[in-house]
Amino acid sequence: MSAKLRLHYDRLFPAEASTREIARALYESVEKLPIISPHGHTDPSWFADNQPFADPAELLIVPDHYVFRMLYSQGSPLESLGIGTDPGKRSEEQSRRIWQLFAEHYHLFLATPSRIWLDYVFEKVFGMSEVLNAETATGYYDQIADCLRRDNFRPRALFDRFNIEVLATTESPLDALARHDAIAGSDWPGRVITTYRPDPVVDPDFEGFSANVERLGELTGQDTSRWPGYLQAHRDRRDYFIQRGATATDHGHPTAQTADLSSQQCQVLLDKALTGRISADEAEQFRAQMLCEMAAMSLEDGLVMQLHPGSFRNHNRDVFAGFGRDKGADIPVRTEYVRALKPLLDKFGNRADFTLILFTLDESTYSRELAPLAGHYPCLKLGPAWWFHDSPEGMRRFREMTTETAGFYNTVGFNDDTRAFMSIPARHDVARRMDAAYLARLVAEHQLGESDAFELIRTLSYDLVKAAYKL
Image (cartoon, rainbow, N blue to C red; front, side, top):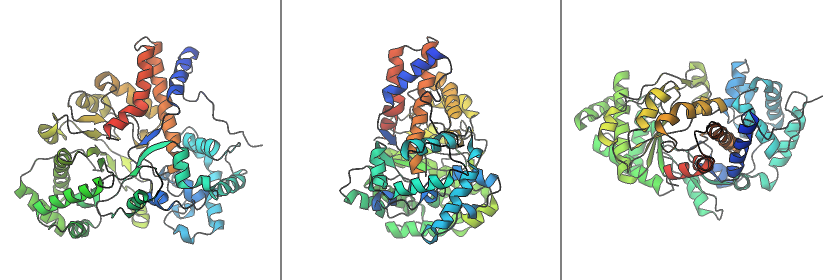
């Protein structure tokens, strides 16, 4: 007999009864606030075209690297999960096989954030009442597939149902943003904006870098082989993105290294990068310089800057070669911020009209580096617990290790940073519950007054993110 699927109302709240009661009241005060999703990787075509999602596997498994990386770690080939295959050529039988494989291995996700998010989606969105397993897989697939055929499960309807106030996607400077233009030209009032992610044209190690930079020049009419033209091309594309709603940039550099080089030095590095003769150290210098250049441009055009360093991306050589980027093989590495950011902070750190939001995958830097930096420099804010730490315990550690030094107001609330659209309300629900739990403990220990806690829970759930991202 299958176990019943029932999300406990007090999940993630403190075990101690009186503290739990405080957490519950705090959470209830923000439970229904609109969702601000200022940084993510959902596909804008979903909202531009508003077509039904293809099937349960294509919706919940294929785009979610949290899901398929776990299954891959237990020996399931990525091909068996539909990764790298054309969804338009996948038969229903193949999709059902993917779903069955997922269901048979659902126990692998016990006590992981993925399990929390997925159970939320299954119960709250699709009305499932039994836990997913091998026996219930077919019933799950049929019920979810039936839902996806209905108009109220199309992307725009779900966007409205999830109470999303604004959602930001992330695009390359080479993207024409046609999908965003289509959304803006429609009669749907949902707000979906873009984010400027220049990695393909600022990272000499990015595949096709030279061709990408040439294409950047074609799009802007600038000579991107020369340093002034290359920088102007970025300015032009940033303006193009701003005209389509962008309020932020995002940078996925391997490190937080910044540099302040002369134009002459920059031209030498650009020449080497475009001819493929650049060394690893020189490529790092180029990326470091570009962070300072992007900061300078943010002072000109007002875009908020986000830095997501500390990931050894595409660590699995064979997976990268066979399936490309973002297939669950990005691994955290030790990251240094204090010395790395100094060139940028020497130039811009004291500017209150510039915002740089810092993320990390190296939790050891929270209390030692990031909180002290953000607790001093006017330009710096701390992004939420990110990626592998977008979890109940990761959120708890983030608050415990940063609040005493940086406070709450040098952080930017929560963002879900997801490709998995259906998980967005679940992720925000977890964040609100964990902040409620943290604040409840401070109230119970008489470190925080109740009225302050109720003000803070709204601030952390809604106000900070809206202000930080200029939304």
